[in-house]
Image (cartoon, rainbow, N blue to C red; front, side):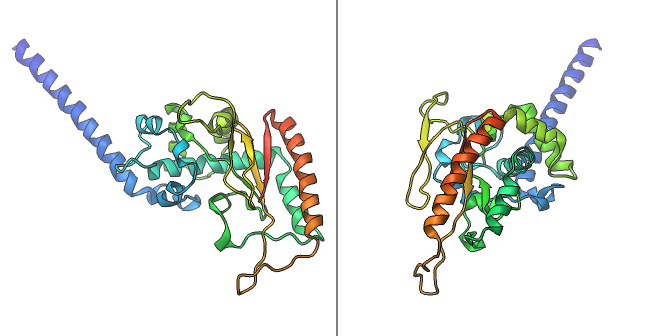
Length: 269
């Protein structure tokens, strides 16, 4: 009787473990297709998989780490789960930066300047401008966010808020961001993930600046205006605008770097 009892208990345990494994497999598979049902889904700005795949720095994501942490879809691309968790992280990082730096005040100065700076029209915004949660006209965060470098506990905190949270930005998440964003923004070399150095950013007004790979990068837009035929409209004060922005860049890079204790780079776009 004892023998049969042991067999029964063992078989029952196997059934429970198998059922649990199947449940979680189905759960994650279903979640991948029903992200919109998450509590915070409608309040997040999330790019499509296609938009991210077309990002020129997509190859810098660590796909092996993503796969280990369940952040890859069946086609080997970043999953929708990744993009939702990344959006939660971005919103809290941007909230932290708004609280810590005078980015909002700087944006207002540009808006009220007599030099008439032009912000990009919605149809001309790039991925970073479209997905920004800062609510600014000219300034956005330009770093890619590599959340695969978060550990599983930290990813679980993000996911808990995504599933059940009522507020996108929380003190807990801002604390997590403050602790981890140095690793999340760092651009790695796929041939040497631990390498230090610099890399070329995608072209901004014909330039490809070389930026330290661990720097926090902000973008300031000074959009060009074109007429209905696609011809550039001549702008007044163009030289004054460029000189003013170069001065802002030099001053704020130094100021923000000192505040954050991290190198800050500003792209003039």
